[in-house]
Image (cartoon, rainbow, N blue to C red):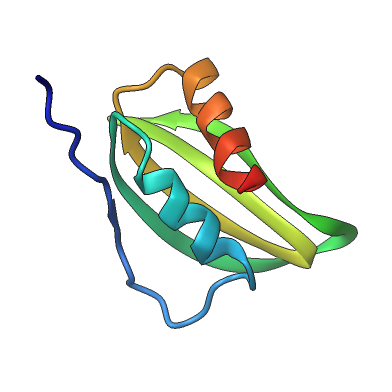
Amino acid sequence: MSKSTEGRLVWNHSTHIPGLIPILERLTQQDCIQTITPGVIGRVKGHCPQMQLRVSVPIRGGFKLIARQGKTVQEVFVLTSLSQDKLEESIVKAMKN
């Protein structure tokens, strides 16, 4: 019987893209995700009406994600042993709920 341990969501910033935190909380419940840390928020020229969360680049021990909504963009760092494909599947699941 294997014990599933829930990942951890780090709250190091006071501001987040609206709607991002519930998605990240669902993502922490996926297997093999250790830590999720929202990072810097920025502004972009393009407008993205729906929340988007996509894998950007690999980092040591995981991946950097980019969250976008409206003209706002936020980096999200995920420490995980999942492959990029499996992480992308987990993101899709977390965004559907």
